[in-house]
Image: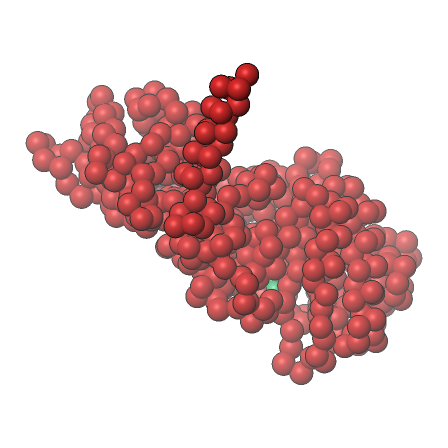
Length: 455
Ligand code: FUL
């Protein structure tokens, strides 16, 4: 009994030692963050009075009478998103203009005073129900900046905001992400948001939901709206002296190898120029190839792609947007269908499981003997992030008629690294990985692919 106890104690002491770097705890992802990251692609739905006024930001004076999406069909949106492989949809329940897409009990400025469905409609409910029906997750954006609400700028507004948050957290079933946006116009009234109290509500009523703001606590902004995560992208940052809405965007973009908290980056970008639908942007929807590129630059750099696809003023997604997102997914599926190294390397590296991994020391490369020649131009690497993000850089070489040649060099891996290489035919590759401070690396998955000709 006693001996067992000592063993157990020694084991726990050993674990906590390996978990520490220079006296500092290695930040680890939570279950909800891991679930969020493995979704890879989420859809953003920007929709409100702006859809009818042709604006990107309203000013709060819009009359609810202009909101009349006569053919609104949230099932059409969500079905298309599901078919295009999106795992979650986030709706702008309230944007900066303050108009509520659900019949809030705390304001008259909402769908209930619009002609749409004679004031009996609820866009948030239709979206949440459709997400449930098609089996994707649901999230919402509730803008703290509110140009309509009279209490805005006073502490009473915090109560108003919490009341609305409560409605959204408790009336629509499971919520998987809540978006707290720090954006604010230059002439906006000054306002002290009680963010801690908002977040406590999310934890209490929707414990599995991740909380987004530009600095977390669960998910951070990638620092731009162009769809570009840093080539070096750490999931850790230190937010102690940072303020929401005023963060250093370059820091957010690359993260921090010695950051104190696990707050991975979300890459939000629109399929169109604007976030809201505008008739005159119908002809400049991003092509499937452009979207694939965004995927490489976000998911392929340890981030998550939050792609905005805005419904139009009839309440429908436009056909060209739908065509683009579906073709995007077809290309990705074609490229990543066959891992050419499957069955040829250590099973733990190609079993599709993030929890199994292989340890690689800096001085000893992993030799990948592919047995026969394979031809590839994409490499995928995944780190065992359940134990934190440790890999600082690495490189690969391939065997070419008797010599090793350079294939690619890279920094950080994290959840996923996608590398586009020239077309290579070889039977052997070796992979060098360097962990931070000379540590060994934990690699979960490796894949070699030949890109779809449509890429
Ligand atoms: C920004 C907002 O100001 C934009 O209108 C848009 O909603 C974007 C996703 O976030 O901060």
